[in-house]
Amino acid sequence: MEFSILEKIISSVIIHNGKDSITKFIWHGGEPLLAGLDFYMKVVDFQNNFKKDGYRILNAIQTNLTLLNDEFIDFFIKNEFGVGTSLDGTKELHDKNRCNSFDKVFKNLHYAKSKGLHVGVICILTKETLPHIEEIYSFFRDNNIDFTLSPVIPNSRYSEFILTTDEYYIALKQLFDLWYLDENCKIRVNPCGSIIQSILLKGINLSCIHSENCLNHFLTFLPNGDVFPCNRFTDYEQFKIGNISNMTFTEILKSEKRSELLSRTIETINACRKCEFRQYCKGGCMNHAYEFYQTIYERDYYCQSFFKIFQYINEKVNVSINKAKRQI
Ligand code: SF4
Ligand code: SF4
Image 1 (cartoon, rainbow, N blue to C red):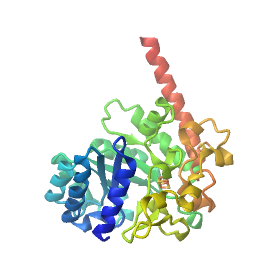
Image 2 (tube, rainbow, N blue to C red):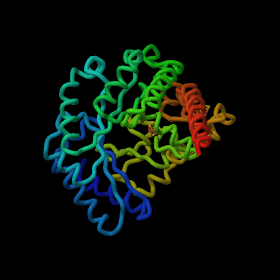
Image 3 (cartoon, rainbow, N blue to C red):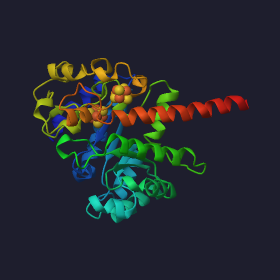
Image 4 (cartoon, helix red, strand yellow):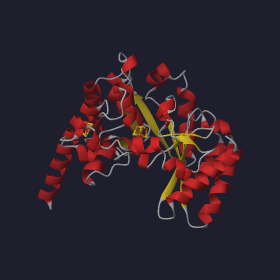
């Protein structure tokens, strides 16, 4: 990406969000460390001009860690970058689908942690890893690594590889029970933690999947300046919102395509209208809906998994709250 385009993106987003909001830039796609440390130093220098004026800015990076070195680690700590990676559990499980990269990722993850850099992990749940929830949980707990269990993206063209909604629910339930009943556990486990948060805070959930419409909070910019609602839609030209090289940020925000995508709310999804967990779930991910039903005006493919896990965790949380009340 030409740096002038990047400057335009950074400045327009920060100014649009204003000083009362926090603007977060997430660097991902391909392997973002390939851009080199100089690139991120330039980005931070540019952002600092706005910080000096009182704007609040955060950065996060999703990397496979293979290029992580001391310079990157020091830079990420100094500039408070959130760092995330993908690790699908134990070496045996991870290496099956990720080119035998476990040793390198695990070594670098531990090294980063030993130097004080927190690294969050996304663990993808597939048909192959499904029977190993207990193993996966023990692995992350014993290694003191926070993780998010995320199901493989549903796609109707490859339905033999995707999880059924029952399979995903049973995996989540198993994970929740392991974590919730484990008094010695010190790690954050999502989506279990974020669902509890959503129940306790009456629908405030930090996960994009359960936000009113993720487009209110996210936009994806490609190196050529193209703008999409989310990186999961970048293969679909019909989801392109515009291009920052020949449009202003205001034009992008007011574009017909963004307005059309913003019209997906829980009110426009028939199946969600009477759902008792609509306040927490909000219809789920529009990409999960599109990949499976070829329309965004549908509920998330994993609807039934969400419904059952919200129901299950809600009951557990209420039991704990009532027990605590009786002890007061
Ligand atoms: S499309 Fe799905 S994954 Fe992408 S930002 Fe929206 S909710 Fe999140
Ligand atoms: S659980 Fe299903 S029906 Fe209920 S709000 Fe979520 S997607 Fe809609």
